[in-house]
View (cartoon, rainbow, N blue to C red):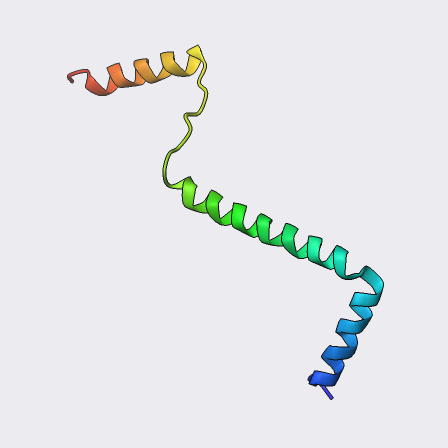
Length: 74
């Protein structure tokens, strides 16, 4: 009772085809495939290069001050 047999899956497939139509299902599958492909390419390209985070002058000045404090002899 808990599992679906092949006949149940066939009925579900027929109902889905009647509701959406074969053209809409094909375009939906194509769109999902392109989305997954672009997601995978994004994950693979993530390690290639990291874009620089924009900084403002205040952050640069703080970094310079911190570096000079780190290098100061005690």
